[in-house]
Image (cartoon, rainbow, N blue to C red):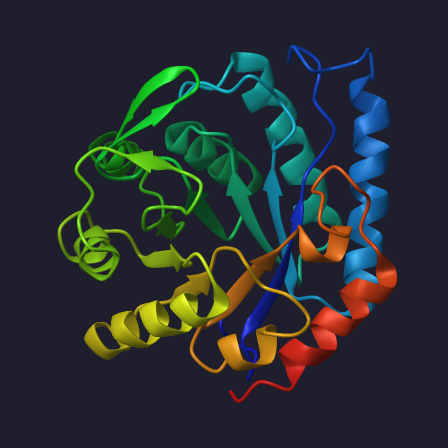
Length: 261
């Protein structure tokens, strides 16, 4: 994943709500597949380093993914990896890290992102979510998986029960819960910079990705600290339900490339 001499710029590929989801409006899986591949082709041609595939628009979301969701995500992920083997592919199944690892193994993806919830306890619209680190690592051991697990340290949109200081949480995710890397972001670009510098000072060799809040205006400075970024909202004109804006995506990638290695 880190063979390139600059921070990794990854785009969130977020299909429409898939069959089986309450929010699906009779859109067939074949239509969704065509949309995903068209978006991936544009991202690849622009020169981004890869994608994170996320079923962001399914809903409402609980912590246990439905069987059909896992099946559809596995098909999409496998197609992306087969079509673009040279690009990085991450998997994020809302909000089930176990399902994410299963999909990643089936598709031979490059990493898993566990956004909600690797450690601790949080409250969502469907109830409590509990840290899955023990179950995820048990599956990883059973499958003899080599796929890295990257976990969010208190994702900014979560509501956490008895949260630790975020820098401590990031370190504990790696040192006590054995994640391979961390996704991190603050409420603002300045807070993200502060948090990133603090975590890098404590764990300089651990991959650190910016989880959110990146824009074409701040990404160059942020990528002076972080090893990579996942972007969605800014290149979709402020709404993740919008299609990717090619002009914004080009600006964003250009600014990423200006960051110091």
